[in-house]
Length: 131
Image (cartoon, rainbow, N blue to C red; front, side, top):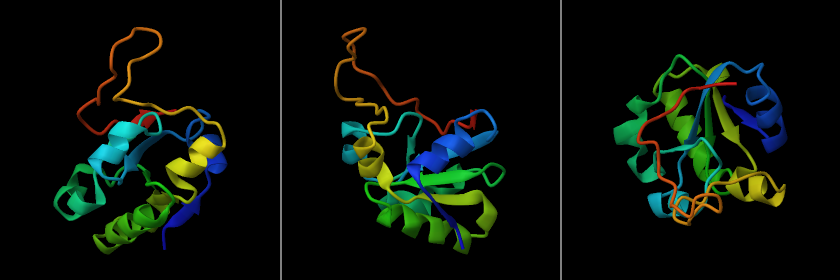
């Protein structure tokens, strides 16, 4: 079974510097991700997941996120079915909604940045993060 992880535990475990490399995958649809997302997410919509899951490395932990934790749990089960190590697959159980409710920072790619006045853009590939 995959591991459900709260926003707090994700921040403590993966972004504090002790977590090493990891992948943060948002499985919401493109329009949802474009509206607002957790910083550092790479978007692979659940509707495209079977065709694109091979973009996700098996060598680093995978944290899956959606709006409330339901679609990301489906994606987690899919990855386990494809042979990913259960100790490397996490579901952000409170999702983007829970993240925002806690007041954590979000990216809004379709809106101009306060600092530059320019729209932010997607990085175009999965980023592996080193905390």
